[in-house]
Length: 373
Ligand code: GLY
Image (tube, rainbow, N blue to C red):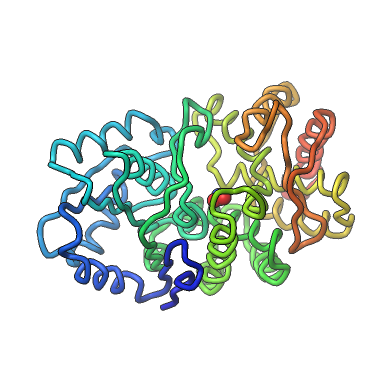
């Protein structure tokens, strides 16, 4: 068991096989501190994950269940959480425990941050994406229609408990979602993490994940979480270095929003970020000096593992427009995070519309010319 951030001051993150036992101890140590305890789940985690932690509660706990999926990360689900807490006598000393993937920890954090002007919350992420990204660092939020995370706060959880046991039953598509964020952590901050992960994913097909890869991922979890936790503790409110975490996300979020609007089976966050990383690798070659060799290394690894999110040419202008709604945009101008080499990122790079459009064509070319397409 590792306590990743007790030294850094923002919030502790407990990881490893004993993390859930540490959660039990936390509940026991704090049993007089909270007037009511609520557990927020979605339709999946209530059946698959809540039974795993149920025995830690001495008394009956208030369960709140909302529909699963990114499309439900909206104000309606949030109202359900607020109403449930209100009707069950939730006061300012209540604690909300978010048990689920990134959708649950984002939305639950937001519901807690705003209920009675803020109650305490903690996260127990159950997806790889939640473990390596969403649960840590205090970004809370909901989508505004299909605009991602447009409403939200920076509000830090009391503590985060990350136990890899929840990964045992996670479908491969969700594992790949989290792997995209781990690859990003390597690209922006650790050449070693990138190289290890890239060589692992290259030997796995785009449709299956071997149990060996799963084991390797679990071994790399701490390094990935440590990168996220360190960066967010240095710059909790995203004034500077935290922006490096946005690599792949300016175009990735635009592609994700486009897909949420147009596809019956929309892209997952990780699939969209994987596509965004290929586009922004191209931009890094043009604008921040990323070498041709490293561009090739990145695009070939990512494209061998993530399926082609086919984007017809007539979608390009819509996607370009959507990049303007990125939360980091100012006066309609994007500020991209790019790479100057593997393991090192630069922030606040302007990019012309023409180059963004070229990067989308580059993405399609990578796949149409690849032997996997
Ligand atoms: N997911 C990026 C961040 O937390 O800043």
